[in-house]
Length: 216
Length: 207
Image 1 (cartoon, each protein chain N blue to C red):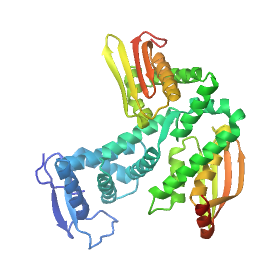
Image 2: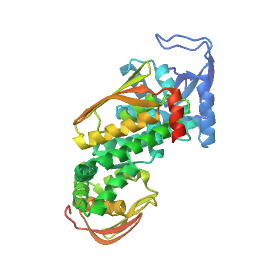
Image 3: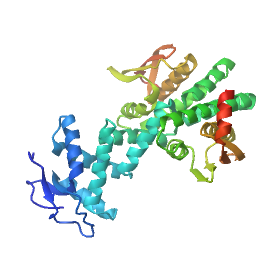
Image 4: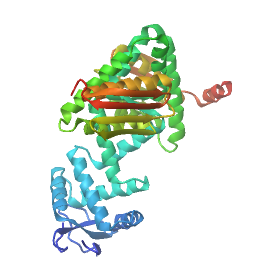
C-alpha cells in the first residue's frame, strides 16, 4: 500500500498526446493499481478519449456522488438492480394508481389473484433459469427492486428446506397486501417451495415455505 | 500514464482541484485516498461492462430518486395490465379521471421539486428513463408550445389512453393546455400551449 500517493505535477508533467494544456489547471499525479489503470487506459482508447479525460470524468462523478451522500458502488449496484427489474418485465407506476385498480378488483370480487399467482410462478421459473445453482438467491437480489416502496422485506433460509418471507409496509392497503402475498406465493412455488403457513394483515405479510413445490 | 510509482501501481494525471475534493471525501469515509481511487476505478470498469457510462448511471440514479420520492412503485407489468384490462371497459371514465388527477399531482410535485431546472425537460427525461414500456419519447418546445410523442410496441390501448390522460394532467400543472391530441394503441401525439400567466392566476384564485 502506498502511503503518499499523489504529488504536485505543476505544469511540467508529461501530457497525453493531443490533449490541450490549460496552464491554469494544476495537475497532480495519483497512484492506482496497475491492472486497473491498464484496463481504464484500454477503455479510454476504445472510447477515443485520453486517459486524462476519462479519469477526469470518473473523478467528477465521484465528487458529484459524494455530494449526494453516496458512493459510486451504490450508484452502480442500484443501476444493476433496476436494469434487472426492467429486463424481467417490471414496470414503474404511481403507487396510488396501482392501489386504486387493485382496490377496484378487490371490491368487485373479480378473480385477479390467479393472474398474480401465475405471474409470480413465471418469475420463479425465470430466476430458476437465470441462476439454476441458487435461484432463491437470484430472487433475493431481484427483490431489492420490488421492495423500493417497502419499509422491510426479508427472505430468510431457516434451514431444513424452510424459507420465511416477511414484508412490512404501513402504506399497503389490505387489497394490495393480499395480492402481493399471492404473487410471492406464486414466485416461491415457481422456485420449488410450497407454502405451509400464511399470515397476511394490512401492510404485513409473513409466509413460510418448505422445499418441494411445483418447481422442486 | 506516467511511470514512477511503487511496484504494482501506476501514476495517472488528474486535476489538482478534484484531488482535494476526493481527499476530503475519502477522509470523511475514514478510508485512504488510494483505496478510494481504486474503488472508483473498479466501479468505472463495472459500469463499462454493463455498457453504460458512470455519468449516465449517476443521472439515472438522480431521476429514479425523483420517482421514488414521488412514491412510484415497481410492479410486474403483466399483472398490472391484467388489472387495468378487467376494469377499463366498465370504469373507463373514473379511471381516466384518476390518472388525470394523479398526473396533476405529479406535475405539481415536479414544479416544487425542480426549483432550478426546466420541469418539461426533466419530465421528458423521467419518461424516457422510467417508462420502460415506451420505445420512444420525444418532447420539443418552441414559442410557448410543446409537442409530445410517445410510442410503445407493448402498451395496450387502455393503458395508452390512461397514459395520455396522465400526461395531460402533468402538463396542466406545468402550465400548459392541450391544443391537439391523438391516441391509438401504443401511440400518443399531443400538442400543448403555454397558459397565459394572468389566466393561471385566475385559475388559482378560482381553486
